[in-house]
Amino acid sequence: MMSTASKIIAIAAPFVIIGVLGVGGFLALNALSPKPEEADEAPRGIAVFTQEIIRDDLQLTVSSQGEVQPRREIAISPQISGRIAYVSPAFIDGGFVRRGDVLVRIDDADYQLARVRAQSQVASAQQALIREQAEGELARQDWEELGTGTPSALALREPQLAEAQAALDAAQSQLRDAELALERTVIRAPFEGRIRSKEVDVGQYVGTGTSLGRMFGTEIAEVALPLTDTELGRLGLSFAFEETADRPGPTVVLSANVAGQRREWLGRITRTSAAVDTQTRMISAITVVEDPFGEGMADGVPLAPGLFVSATVEGEIVPDVMVAPRAALRESNLIYVAEPEDSKMHIHEVNVVYTNREFVYFDDGAEVGDLAILSPIQAPFDGMNITIAENN
Image (cartoon, rainbow, N blue to C red; front, side, top):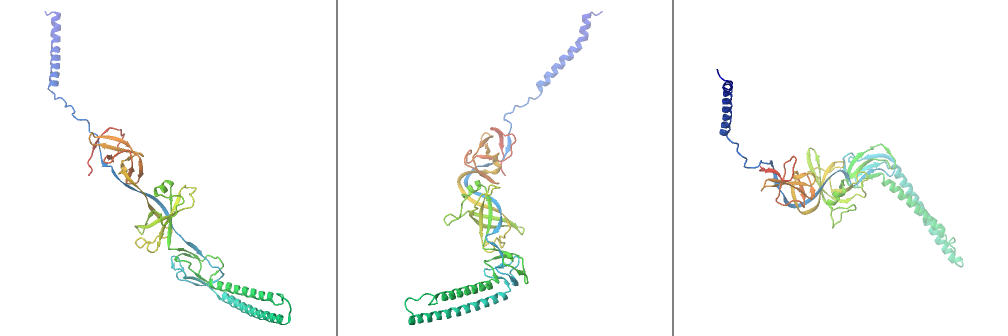
């Protein structure tokens, strides 16, 4: 019979053989499997688009908006009372009139009669004065023939002569007043312009000061452009600016969409308003456009009162500043610069002079020729790995 030890060996031997074969097979497979290649390069950074920073002069501009207003606008009203006898065909909403054109005539029959009465009074006063002059001359001759000493003024009828002269002066004043009233029955355009509204017509009785309509001048149009203190500085203006021959105002381009097309009118700032707006804390720069219904029109389109326009004003020129696309500016004063030699990104703090929708202008913090990064970057940090993409 087999001993106990022999039995144990007989039982364990297969398991030992299987274990040895398994370990050997694992080591053999491990030795024969291909080893992973070690990375020779660092991981590539995110691809970014860049544009070179350049140097250029900066033409400062300011944008604003405002409503077109005529420089002169009046209410047309009579200085006398009466019934309207005539209305000019041009006296309608939108009508053009020249200086001196007759707009309205008031029935002048009563004023013709008043002038005749005044003329009669003048004639009577002239006759009384002539008679008094003759009587005064007779009184002087009588005194020279019969009197002695120095004659009194009353003896020479001097007070009576002065009274007659005063009566004539008063009659002539009444005649002039009657003639003025007669002249005022004809209401004329005081300047060249356009009728905004008409409020009366033939047959209507009007009194002194009654509004007949409104008209505005077409020689000059104005636009009040509200500006901040900073914007005034960009334009080189002060609170008390007024245009002179030696110091003309800045050029202004006014624009608006009219009849489905963009129109532009040229003007200039001639003065600033007298006071700062207490609500907005802004001051208005008054822009003038000459002959807005003539030579100042834009392709035949006048600059009409009430039109709301946008304005671009040319300011001072800042020489020799650095320029980068507006997309390169991060936050308010940071620009990311790409280093092509080591494919790293560096964060630069720049001194911003001016920005608009297209560019950012600065005078310190970067160098001309640096590559400003335009692409958006999440979680940026100085020294970040990047890859510079080629701009198509």
